[in-house]
Amino acid sequence: MPELLSVQQAEELDVGQVHEMYRRYINRSQVTLMTSFGFGWELVDHAEGAYLYLRDGRKVLDITGGVGVLNHGHNHPRILAARMRFQERRRMEVHKTYFSPYLAALGHNLAQVLPGDLTRSFLPNSGAEAVENAVKLAYKYHGGRRNTILRADISFHGKLLGSGGLTGSAQHRFSYPTIPGIVTFRYDDLDSVRAAVRAHRKDVYALIVEPFSASTMQWCSEEFLRGVRELCTEEDIVLIFDEIYTGWGKTGSLFYFMRYPGLVPDVLTTSKSFGGGKSSISAYIAREPIFRKAYDNLADAMVQSTSTTYYGFGEETATAIEAINIAIEDDYPARARALERVLGPGLERLQKKYPDEIADVRGCGALWGVFLSGGPRLLDLAGKLSPLRDPQLRPKLVACAVIDALYRDHDIYAYYTLNGRSPMVIGPPLVAEPEEMERVLDALDAVLAQGMPRLLTRFIRERVSSLW
Image 1 (cartoon, helix red, strand yellow):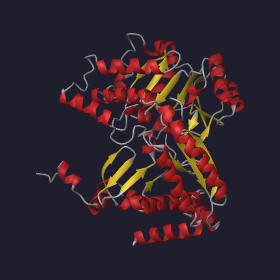
Image 2 (spheres, rainbow, N blue to C red):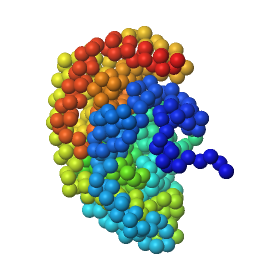
Image 3 (cartoon, one colour):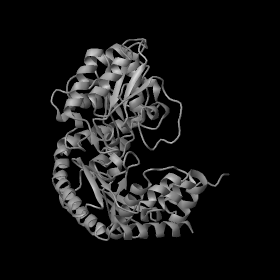
Image 4 (spheres, rainbow, N blue to C red):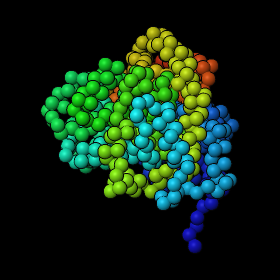
């Protein structure tokens, strides 16, 4: 008999055993990378709301927001109750020849909260799947007669073969095969879009863009978004807004594009907090005429639902129903704006106090990027000469040093993005309170007061010692 571990035995593993199993069965380099930080040496016992509770008794404020997943925080009681209700009643998870009341209700709720005729939903598992299925819809809408899709030079749409090809990301260092016909325009540059459309006249079937780029903390102007909407309507191009990260209140409106009345894409993609922090579920929601032309016929009615086994999985859809209701009833956009009223002025104040350490601050709602600077210029040369050829080595090391100090000295857990200029991200769950953001600002002030040379020296020394 194989020596299998039980769930209880898994829960009893210590951090050394976990590291060893990662090295043997997952990825050795992940262990090397993550043990660069204090949190790589500790295990979480449980999590609730905006906090992680470690095995050693420490209580850590989590301002990562689960990288977009945890608008509802960790283990929201209403989310847990909805899942327990489903389990206790032994509801059916999936069977595609029976209709699901959960799937029907979730589709209804999405149509109720979104503008215009965004009424037709498809519910796979991940954001990348939602993107690829949205592109597939657009291609089918044109019957395969068009072969060009436009994407921005600043974008993150996933890491699958198709979605990875649509991602304009600095972190992609290996070229995979992808869907054909991808053409790039400059982010938030309407003239660039117009030029791309002219160059591929009557051959563009879709344009995909993030209204707010969470990986770079840049966003499209209202003029750009409305101009792209008008151009796509004129040219019969399917306009896809990717709000996988920024949906469900994160930026101060339910979705970023909804701050502009009357602006409606042809397809919207969402995931991450859509599952309430407990469910792996995503969606695209399409306008009625786009969807009907592509799939609403007997020959194609099952084309999309057969693209993933777990489409409309029962407990996942029940969880998403509750997640939407919480976001609406507790007014998550307003909660994000309340956090913004603390973070916006506070981060700007720190930028003025530490101009050599903070080059820029950008964001809105409960999603902010702190673009850190400083450190010896020699690190730029080291980045160019390293095997990774990483021109962003210095800002990444600076961000890592600050994140590490926040965690070790102040019990605050932050992260930085790998895209663009690699800002440190402050993206707390929307259940966090403004007073907790004051604590974050005070801690960041104390960390930066140490000076970047001292922070870098400490971080690099600890990093070297961890290798031995």
